[in-house]
Image 1 (cartoon, one colour):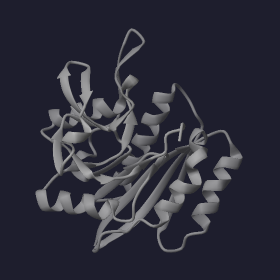
Image 2 (cartoon, rainbow, N blue to C red; image 1 turned 90 degrees about the vertical axis):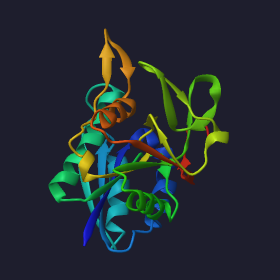
Image 3 (cartoon, rainbow, N blue to C red; image 1 turned 90 degrees about the horizontal axis):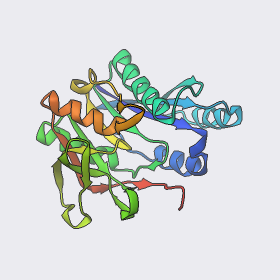
Image 4 (cartoon, helix red, strand yellow; image 1 turned 45 degrees about the vertical axis):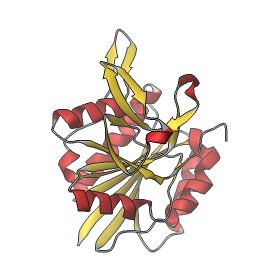
Amino acid sequence: MKKILIGMGLCSSKEYCLNEVMRKLKELVIPNGFEAEILFVVNSYDQEFKDKIKDFLFGVDSIKYNLIEFDPIGSFLDIIINMRNNVIDFAKMSGADYTLMLDADIGVEPDTLVKLWHHMSDNQLHMISANYATVQDNLGAIPAAFMKKADYDYCGIKKEDCYGVLKVDAVGLGCVLVDKQTYHIGFSYEEDEGETKLSEDFSWCEELKKNHIDVWFDSENNVKHYLKRD
């Protein structure tokens, strides 16, 4: 039986949507023929927040759960990268064939994973992202998928161009299914004189393409992004 790891980084700044995210996670359907395991990478000094995560873990019997805790060190981007790399390191250690990476403010639908898996299996893909709204400058909410215009310059795809599965240049990493062929590509970001040139999601997608792995976006597989302004 193949194994899938569901990995989520959690921090107390996302506590405003924790209950809804966890409720939806409990309803996630695992594809037939897979055993699943969930990993929470918890980054917080807040013991009350950590206890809430543990309460969720102890309340579920149908799936194996794991918890990694670490204290916040470095910039916000450093913390995000640490959480993402912890998920992939655990996937390699545990022998997971696939990993669903989730952000702490993403609410999945029951069929989110099944849809992603079928697209990967049917089309022999190594990664694919679900669709969720993100905020980019003054453009308001746009899909978290992007095309490259020039070095360090990306533009979001338009909602009217979202149809089916699309090959793009970059995606946000809020809800991405990857296989073990991508595990050797770690997360980092490009910086020049203290200025971030590429965040970890864009940098990771750049590295995928350097390794001849295409970036795919399931534009009709919608998940909820709990933006703080909601």
